[in-house]
Image (cartoon, rainbow, N blue to C red; front, side, top):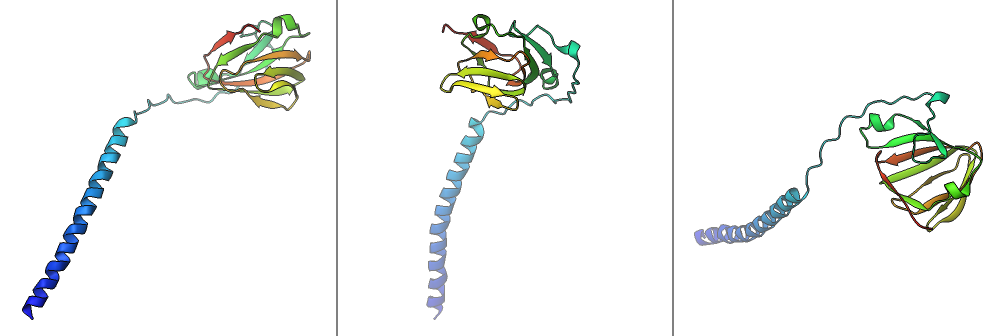
Length: 175
């Protein structure tokens, strides 16, 4: 009888050793994958802390110092508050619309651009979308580097534009 008792634990020990070897192999493989994943992903630099930006409407804040000569811009202080992460401004397109000056095909090298019509209307062209009439309350996004242009607008149009990043290039194209 002593032999039977001795052989059972030995067989169980052998089974445990074999399954333990497999578990150790799986564990080593997981560790290797995790270690590789850790070394591949670069650490993102910490963003500077954003601050609160408050902007109240004042007529004297509309300046003709922006991207378009036919527009006045009211900076909302977002670029400074976000350290260049984003910018936002209210745009007043100065009427009447002159298509020779306004309707120039271009794109912006941005990560994100959104426009909301606060007042009036604007007719746009966007590559792949065609012509669209945007009225008070309309909003749209423009994917990065999409070719677009303004075709026409009302004399009282005001737009809210949000762009990431705050600094970007605009490229004018031949129509």
